[in-house]
Image (tube, rainbow, N blue to C red; front, side, top):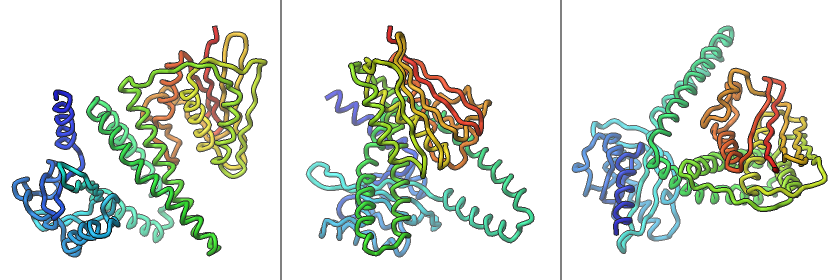
Length: 399
């Protein structure tokens, strides 16, 4: 009973302190609960909305459509907004409107079904998009000022990145409450991501008969975006487990050459055009006593980075070596390298080198690698020169 009360208190604390709005409604669209973030967004008190139809928070045409979405789902079982996310417009108490991302889940509760809506305000994003559109149009008209304008944009992006890094550092200080929330949210994202991935693959298959390269190109973009988001979720889940002390190495004897060859074959499939991963082993022995899953994660991360930060038509060297006293794993590329001023920060969580530009990433990968290696009593080091490639070395003592 105490555990149930603690879990209920934790869930209430998460909802009450959530950054996004959370509203629950019954099968008739009547609001049953609303968290503080949602009341601030819509400028209503909880008393003003609880017991009212949720359509009061939506302007036409969303006002008239919302009940039909629920009735259609109950009638046919086919979701329109239930179990999916979409952009909609909200209506504040003062009559103003704002865009937000709405994700709705149906939740069986006490023998009946309620619907939970998660509301993420998109006002800033939309304003930023509009500003970017206007700014781009202006740049096309004023070609002679393009260089100076781009410098200002780069400076603004760097400042925004620094602000995001500071925000992320503050988020880390929220402790175990946020850690549990991240884990819960990451798991919830996996189901829709899997559905999107499957649908994209089916679209690609069914579109073969149309022989339209544009379909394949856009399906590829969807798959890449899903892959990037999945990687981000995996990084956050790994970090949450590390922070919670849930990761304990399980040592066993295995053939590192066999593992390395499997990784090489798998990563070659996702390499860029004419990127070649060259694997080589040195030493008469190939059996090591380590945690195979943690080591595989480390190597995957390093090879993935080498692919990401290297160009097409390049080689990525992947070597393993076992001598009398050590097991040494090396991943070397000829990519963009790491600026010397960033070297001391590379294994810190959420840090990314200043020359990564628009290449996607969370800044968590190397932090996770370093922590996994330490759990296996190893060391990880790197050497890098900007624009001249990077070499990462993981070393384990065998004595």
